[in-house]
Amino acid sequence: MKWNLPNKLTVLRIFMIPFFVFFLMTKDGTDIGMRFVSLLIFIAAGLTDMLDGKIARKYNMITNFGKFMDPLADKMLVSSALICFVQLLILPAWVVILIIAREFIISGFRLVASDQGKVIAASMWGKSKTVSQMITCGLLILNIKELGTVTNVCVIIMAVLTMVSLVDYLYKNRGVLKEGNA
Image 1 (spheres, rainbow, N blue to C red):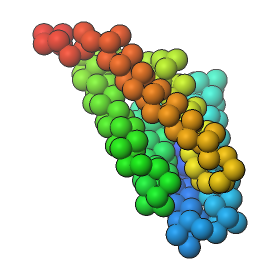
Image 2 (image 1 turned 180 degrees about the vertical axis):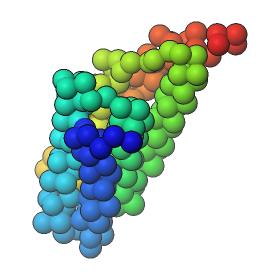
Image 3 (image 1 turned 135 degrees about the horizontal axis):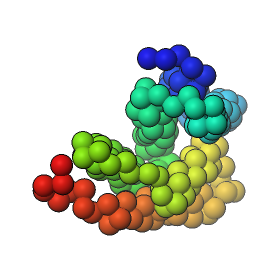
Image 4 (image 1 turned 90 degrees about the vertical axis):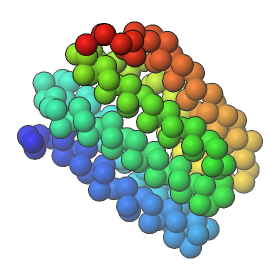
């Protein structure tokens, strides 16, 4: 593995996850100061995601490690947050199951496509889903009662974008699952 800056940022994001979870879950998530620290870590991790990709593309530092670990690090961060929200009783489990199931399906789909020499690029719907997840996670981390309606609307938008992006990926790339495409 080449230890370039984008790969270091990806690994840093992975190492930030336990700290994010620790601060979020301290005192069963009731300490607003700890939640704020958790939010700062979550934002910093999100910024490393944006930076590593931009740097890798701009300076031609794309590696196989980065192609594999960058999306995995993103899924680990968001999944960790969502699972904590279920534990804290601020997000229903069905939403988390929907989102994580979508990620497994798309990852498997990309694996099959890769075996066929095809690359499935991120779509506008997938990117919108990611943005909605980040915004919603930020609101759920803070868990401010006065923003409850806004947060609930964001959860619904996140769930809808999750399903729309899944259907979009599967429909646009439906030929990947046909036998004999190798």
